[in-house]
Length: 401
Image 1 (cartoon, one colour):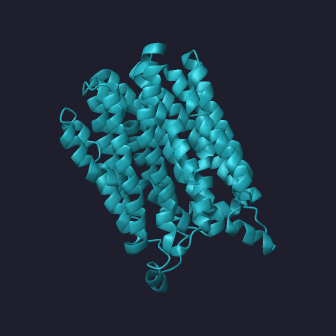
Image 2 (cartoon, rainbow, N blue to C red; image 1 turned 180 degrees about the horizontal axis):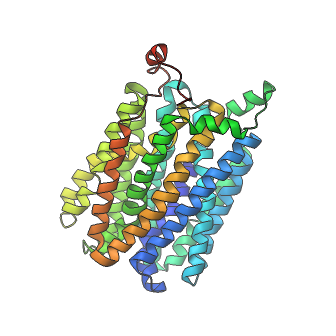
Image 3 (cartoon, rainbow, N blue to C red; image 1 turned 60 degrees about the vertical axis):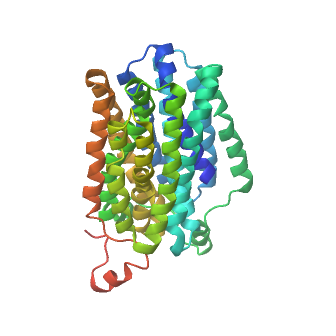
């Protein structure tokens, strides 16, 4: 599951390190580059909602997961052979449509296989792996692109996904909760009336709103335009920019392990607020210290801890807020709303700001909207199974309001 999560984000964001070459080769401006990432987000959101729901209905995750891994891997290959902007855009839509359902399928599997005392940490580990892969990918991809061609870089990252699909086919088992439901003879299908239980849950709605600001700021803006920003605004060589992005990814590994793990001790809400506060400040080092690399790296060490927000608002909190059989759907909803609204609008707006006012404006835009994750996080209700017991004794069960 960790390797799968890592490859998903390499296929999605690794290409941003190649934007300087792609823009030159295909004659694209900042707005068009943003549109390619918006295309991924649009496909991602709809794919996450539809296919994660299908997995809940049929009660099997393994066949769907293998299928989507094969599709997003081949979509990366198609991106590498595209010769026009339209073909490139369509390949990225297909990639997003396959990667979207893969995330809730992976994380709901991890959640189902984890004990109560390790849910936060275990759910954070795949996210941390994606940060680790994203720390390695920029250096590798830029080296391949500068040595040969940016297309060869995309061809290379296609191969691990094909290998992963074969490993999943041989070694993956269905999550325990799915098997228990079948053995007990219960109807594993989800009725539309049951979906209302998910949609009435307060934490699920909050996670959907927070996801819009998180995806729009951290993913659609900061992660998308950071390599280009370092080259164009910072005046750095592409190899130096790739090293900084790799360092940022390495620090994100720490955040995605430390903060979710901390939530197992102090509670989901407190850990989320710490992470979202740090995440809100994460664009500041790049705005203030882009010409002072040592200061930039030192501040990144602290502020990159905020990347732990991802596993909390997308998976742990919504997944624990509903009955276990609805976990994949509850996790897919923030992915859907976050990607379709935040991912699509964020990249387009950031790209337009970059063309008209320079990429510093895009970084300021990220700073403003990421701060909203902290504001809405204040309204979360605690979901940690142990820590919420006291409140359940004196409060009505949530799910009806």
